[in-house]
Length: 336
Ligand code: UT7
Picture (cartoon, rainbow, N blue to C red):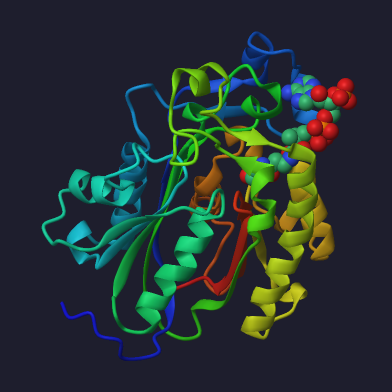
């Protein structure tokens, strides 16, 4: 197909799917590994258990499994897609990208563009906003957007500050043209590199290439100033949601469902309070999956669509935040 920018299309989600590995790790399992307790983890984070991917199953496999479900939900195949964008910060390897690996894994016949978008836990939200532009301009008709991460393979399992938080998973959507009044109504993205020090994976790149010493010092793992990230998250969630609402010409009370990035129950509660939203309108699966990074929003979306909470016509707000620091929000009217 030609990749020509033509028009101002209405863009929405026309298929959704998710996949999480079967192995469950509970808080009591963690009690045996680090100095922590089920009570501390539950009270401070809201997490009770998380899914852990097998050693031989990489991020691209979770991404492909979620994608297959989203494509089936849309009644389409990979050859109906014009591009693949994957939000991830735990790729199989530096390159090829997870996007290219998924394209091969799904046996795409067309040589469609495929790439990863790295924005920490905001990867999916960033990818959604980027993919929307391709369709809105008419350059592409359908884009497969995936949020997939296996942070369990990126953490120091002796560091109780981080290892209790994360789980593995993937969520996918098919974005395409939808009829008015459905589709994406507003979006917003932001970043603040100065806060980059608060949440980082220090070694293995060009700044600190892998050496025996970097491995010994456990620098190939997530390092986080939890408290500072917490404060940033509470502030930015409300702000980002507000900007997307402004863009859409909506107000807080118009939101039917809030799907926040699932990092900590207390962050979610504070954000909901700032948006004057009762917790009944907030989609939460953090208790069962932990923080699945870029997968958290599409995993929660998939669950809420499947169990019938999200209905055509509902206004859905998604807000992500993460390493970078980054944040992004998207508000849409659900339906095709
Ligand atoms: O996806 C985006 C990235 N991540 C996030 O959004 C995470 C944001 N931050 C958080 O969720 C929270 O800051 C944490 C859950 C990471 C930590 O909760 P906190 O309430 O901010 O705890 P804290 O770091 O202030 O630590 C309080 C105490 C400390 O002990 P002392 O110094 O008061 O004696 C920690 O050493 O809790 C201790 N602690 C633990 N105790 C038992 C820290 N981790 C644990 C643990 N089990 N796993």
